Image (cartoon, rainbow, N blue to C red; front, side, top):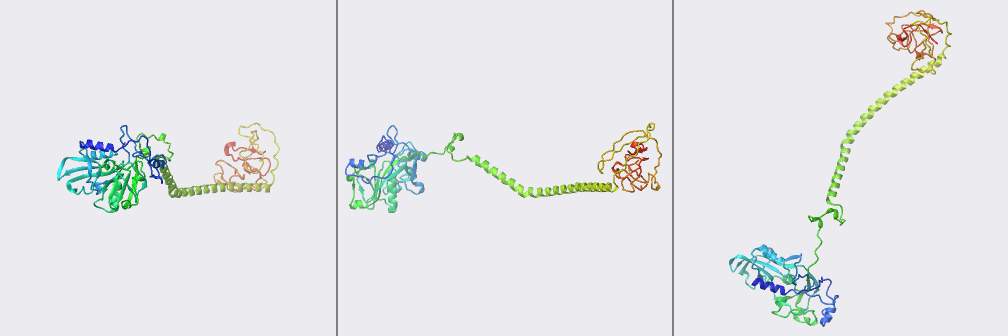
Length: 480
C-alpha cells in the first residue's frame, strides 16, 4: 500500500503540458506585474512558462525518463542519506534494483537502501524512494536506521530565469534551518533539494527561517502553493523576512536534447557512408606513418652503408677503366708513331723505280708463278698483295747485286732480322717488313714495298721467298 500511495503522490505533482517549450534567456523586467494578464504578456511567448513545459510526457501524462541524470549527493561520499518522507518499494530487495527504480523515474528525487531498522537486521533489506527531507539528523533519530546506500539525483537540466534575493515568494514550503553545516552548505542543500524535484520552480534561503522550496505535494500542509502566473501580490519586499532572504532562484526543469553520438562506435557503422568530412580514417594514417618510416630507413641505409661501400667500388672501377684506357691509348700512340716513321722513310727514299720489262714467256711450270704487286697508294701497310699467277722461267737460286756480296748465314741460325729486328716466319727467307734476306744484311733496300714483304735493289728477276713463306714454294718471283 505504501508503494502504491507513493506512486500516486508522485504522479499528482506532474502537470501535463501539450506543447514542449525549452527555457531560454532571463525573465522579463516587467515580470511579475500587477495583474495575471500583464505578467503573462511580459513574456516573449505571451505567457509565463508553465510547470514542466520543457519536459516530454507519455500518453498518460507522466514525465518521460530523461537521458541525463546527475548525482547531487552520495552516501558513499559522506552524505548521511537519513531522509524521512519516503515511500517503500516493496517489490525491490537489492541495492541495484533500488537504484534503478529511482534513476528510471524522473519524479524520484532520491533513493535509500536500508539494511537495519531499530537495531534489527532487515531480511530482506528495504528500498525507499521519494523527495526526502531531514536527511542529516532524521529529526534527532540518526541511529534509528542503518543506510547501506543512498543518492539524491537531478533528472535533466535546470534553467535559471532569475535570482531571488531580498524578496519573499509566498506559498513556498519551509524546511527550516539545517541542524549542521555552514550557511553556504545550507544554501547548497536547499538549492539541491529544488534541483532534485522536477516540479520545483522556486527556492529561497533565509538566514532566520532557513530553506524554502516549491513543493506542491507538501505545500498543502502549510499553504496553497505559489500562484501562477506570479503577480506583485504573490511576493513581498521591504520587510525583515524579505530582507533575510540571502539566496534564491526562479528555475525551470527540462530534458535537454541528447548530443549526437559518434556513429563510428556503432557496430553497424559503414565507413563508405561517412559524410562527416572529419579527415582520413585511422588506417590511412597508420599506412602513411609506416611508409614514412620505410623511406627514412632507406635514406639512412643509403647514407650510412651504401655511400661508403659504393664509393669504394666506384673508385675501383674508375681506376680499372682508366688503366685500360691508358693501355689502349699507348697502343694507338705507338701505331701512330710507327706510321709516322714509315712515312718519313718513304719520303726520304723517293718513289719506287718503274717495273722491269716483260720477258718472253716460258712453258708453264707447276711450281713457277708470276706475281704482280701493285704499288700501295700510301706508305701504310696494306692487308694483302694482289697476286697474278703467270708462268716464269726458272732462275738461279742466287741473286746478283751491284754491291759486294755478303756471306750468307744458315737459315736455321737467324731467327730475327738483323736490320729491323722483326721475327722471321718458320720457313721465310726474307724479312716481311724491311725485305732483308735471312742470315745477311742487304746493302740497300728499295722503299715503298716494305709493307709487301719484297726487297730488291735492281729491276729484274730475283730469287726470293716472300713474307708468306712456303705458300709460293720458295720459287722465283718477278717483281712487277
